[in-house]
Image (cartoon, rainbow, N blue to C red; front, side, top):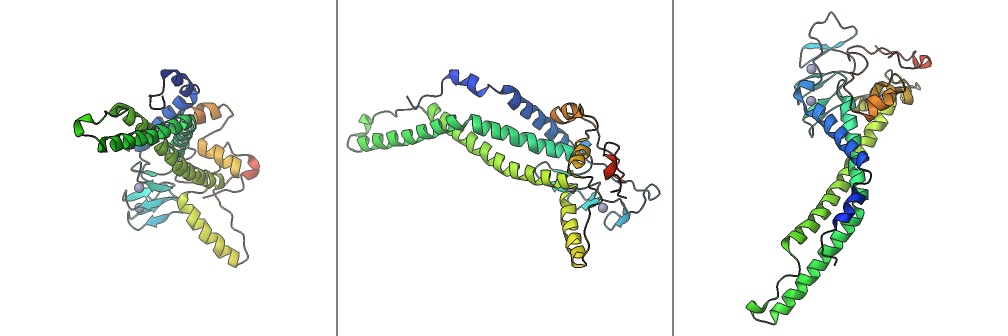
Length: 278
Ligand SMILES: [Zn+2]
Ligand SMILES: [Zn+2]
């Protein structure tokens, strides 16, 4: 009984919250598609000096480097508001695709958590079935050891049954591992977004904070507008309906600003405005 493949009556249970799972899949694929599309790579900073104010020069590109821009040694170019180079997506994460990267991580994690929770019972049954198959195989071989070869009884299960149960175990282990690893990465990036920092700025700001602390001064991140407004700026939420149209649903809207200069976006509440950056 335990060795049978799960009956089809279980399918509706798995597909119950189908809207959540398909939404996660669609959003995840959409964001990954944008991230991996070479035509959507973050644009180069301009090569002409005239348009930019208060910029340094990139030693490798020998070109102006706006604030928050960093040189990526893998892409061999400067990237606006560079966060990090993602080897999994084979692309740099910067000003124009940071939101897509985060959405991809978030929806992928949600999808994996959904699969892990809804597949828990199936995993347990498949695991028990594999253990039972091992036991049956052991008994069969022990019985065969006392008899001649042509009298060996046939296996109590088919190759298909075993492959099915092993696939379920593999699927569940893979889903839960990805949920844990990607979940940790997503939480880390969520913390950075809350603070209005990129991964690179995290290190720079940490050093600066320690340096100023020794002098008895406090460090303030000039690109942070407060936790709530940082999220609104990051996700491009200007009006409440954008939470639906721009966050929950796939959206192609551009981020605030050009990535060349960093002014306070109009959606930020006025009492955060004094934190103006270059
Ligand atoms: Zn450069
Ligand atoms: Zn890169």
